[in-house]
Length: 120
Length: 400
Image (cartoon, rainbow over all chains, first blue to last red; front, side, top):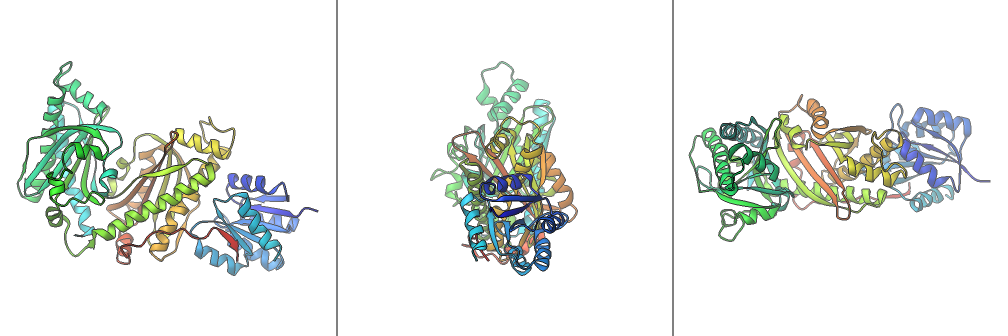
């Protein structure tokens, strides 16, 4: 059975791009535009994997990751960051993130990051 | 040579006096209502200083209170406007341009001389026309015996005073460059300031950041672009909007926080924006309104480019710079800049402006990147710059 994935990004374009990359091999559990929606959808669907943007309005990806990890320590969260967000990545690590991809990304780097996290 | 960065702002205002005098001279000769658009100090290579488009004008050597050279040019359309106003239907175009150029140059130079309480002698004007740095060559300024080359003018790292004069409702644009020789420049800007090499490190840093941004564009869209122009300018904050072209752009504005804080504008002309969204979101090649997915795509490419650009700064300055979510913009370049200047102007009178242009060889693609750091924090950051530092790209993906 295909694993399901939750996509979290405030950019409609990035959600669309990730969906196109992932939908061949994963079931898309849902899409969220901010950290609040991400937590709600995580509770509803318990996805195998979360692709989480960092900089988002209302609630950012670090806070959302922290809350998801607190509720479900076995969750798999991959952060989607732009180049140059080392400090935010450190905060994401502290929040419990399992992996990361840097924008702009292509399908192979996304799949490699997922393999690293899911097979760990 | 050392440059007192604080003095750059006051000298820019001296340049404005010259610009106002030149605009008055132009109005007096032609009856066209001319005004100063831009004054400032620009650090760039000779190639980046000059515009890509063909320009027509005069070169003049200076001696006395300021030693060096000047170049005053019009666009071909601006020259036509002048000729129509002065000698309609005449075949003395070259002579007329040289004479107007001479009078307007005198306005610029007199303004400087009065403000500095000195006298500056000017040589007879030499008519020139050409493109880019070729214009400087055509003027003989960079020849072995030319005034700039003879004075040790650094072609890769030229510091020049730049003014632009425009006209309301008329296709008339005047660009004036004043190139004081090193001794005169030291007199104007010298002090216990920063070495020009340090300023140039920042310009190189911007170029390096732009290269990374260009790579990101290529990776996302398949459009191969190159960094065409990188300039570092010091201008009165109210002059910033006039530094941007008066054409419509599509892109995104960002605020960054850290040391220094500031603003980034990523602007594509409308045709280029259509190329970009067409590459990112098939089926949107002919959009007019850039809403929905097209707008989201423009915000995201701006986001990735800004992160790529600013990353190098953060590395060199050994600091952390956070970037805000993108604010979509679709407006005339100057109007976009005004929104940033309104906020920047609350805390500073002078602005530090990096402007970079990305272009593609195989298609119409034009992207302009403007970065406006907080002026005081920028000066503080200069203290930590090590000439020779370069912006390096960080890692791309992996497990934690």
